[in-house]
Image (tube, rainbow, N blue to C red; front, side, top):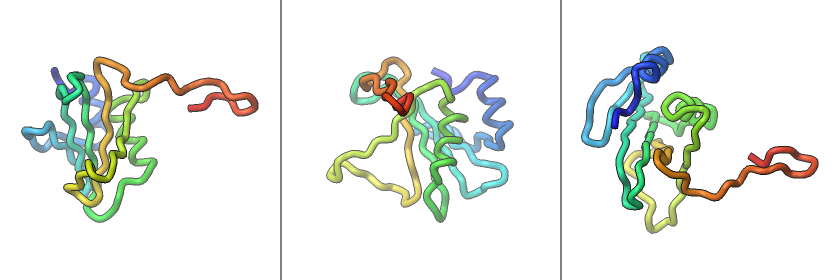
Length: 126
């Protein structure tokens, strides 16, 4: 399965990212202006038997901000799709890079219950 079609790649490159390396764990992207920003994208069938897109992103000296996470989700996964950030139990936590975060996109299933709804006096819950 291809990571992205031609239109998606054009949007990624228009936003300043370009592929720099094909790796065993996916494609490594770098940003033209933020040289300390690395994004690695892969697609694979995980241990649950389902197909997932994995997007990892890191900065050299700091954790990505919430607005950066939202930007990378929009660009590398899409605004109309779900993405998950997983916080595992401590004994399963792996940290290979101090300032790296991960998003997971389910490609052939939806793994969670539907949380959205309307709350009285509030509106949509998510």
